[in-house]
Length: 127
Image (tube, rainbow, N blue to C red; front, side):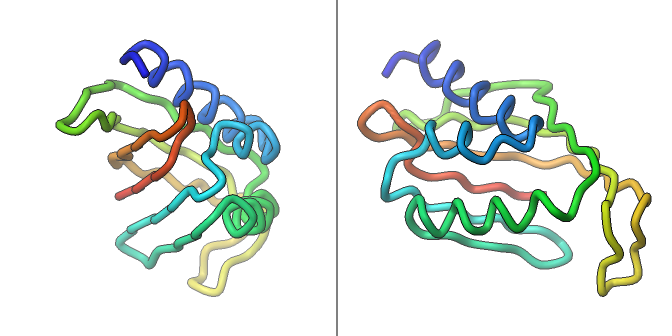
């Protein structure tokens, strides 16, 4: 894949994420996708597109709105693409950690995407 094709695929994935479009996100993924989210407050992981879909569908209920923006893209060795991410979301429900519906969640982080067969094969989100 060219760098331009990788960036376009990542943008499709992020546009679908921002629109709560789980099917649109899944369309960009390799069937054997590996997903890992590493966060200061915990994390999540999924192996394979069906496990990813289930996780993504559960997450859509947590937020009334959400937006990921990408200040920068950069290629990495081995053909992966790393992006800086700014995330803002409004909670739709109360969480066990004390945050309540209507609270705003804001984070900065980095996501790395790896590719196979013209699709996203691995995503590592760190914030």
